Amino acid sequence: MIYLNDELCKGCYLCVNACPKQVYTPSDKLNHKGVRVPIYDVDKCVKCQLCTLMCPDQAISIEDDD
Image (cartoon, rainbow, N blue to C red; front, side, top):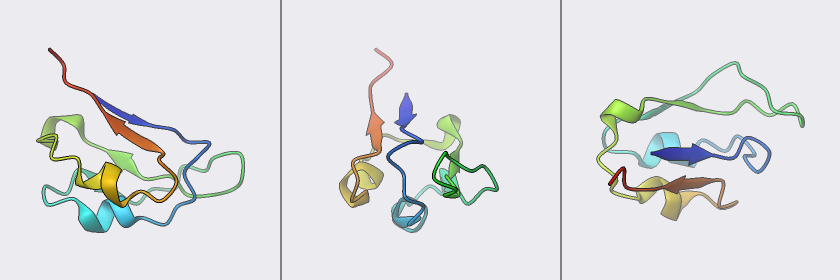
């Protein structure tokens, strides 16, 4: 499961660029700060954790479904 904290995200899209499976895509969804938060497709995620490593604000976490 992917958890993206909309309130911590600053819209840098490093997750979009880092993901080898193109799980994240830019969107028009705005958080309360007016930042465009990326959307994601959980089905594409292989839980490589690159997005969590690249996120400078620790806005993303990934947990196993087990």
